[in-house]
Length: 218
Image (cartoon, rainbow, N blue to C red; front, side, top):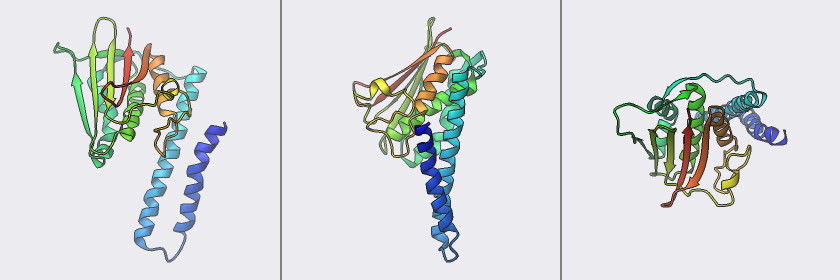
């Protein structure tokens, strides 16, 4: 509860300060617009935090309902990456998507499309925030007789060895965490994958950068 209250209190305090500044009569229009943009970002952050905590609470209580329907991996990746297209363009980052299956069919697994999109989006967002300007993020996927696999990689700094065992813990922030990191995105992603008979692990690429591997089993 202390972690949750801290994460919500900080943007709320900043929001209240911005509101008080916006009430000034002589505030220049340029400055007013800048403050409004900052306020919008803070409110979006609070909204995302509350929504994520509610989703985690539902899974903890066993009340989250997951559908068991065929999920197209290419469509899943497309849906999850769409909200990040513009932020990545602003960072001059490139996104590469690779289907590793030799067959004409597309990889799929049985699960919940909406929840799975949330998981992949959180992982992609983490990669984007840790990938340098002009860097790249790569998503590859395949399906075999045992599992369906989605691999997400970047050419960022990777993970500190001390952080690796704790990456999926709630509210854990690693040494390379961004300033606005909350520490629940990866925890939520693993909970979603696990709920669908899957696994999620993270490792460092030998060439440098981070790698997340999702596997969904029948």
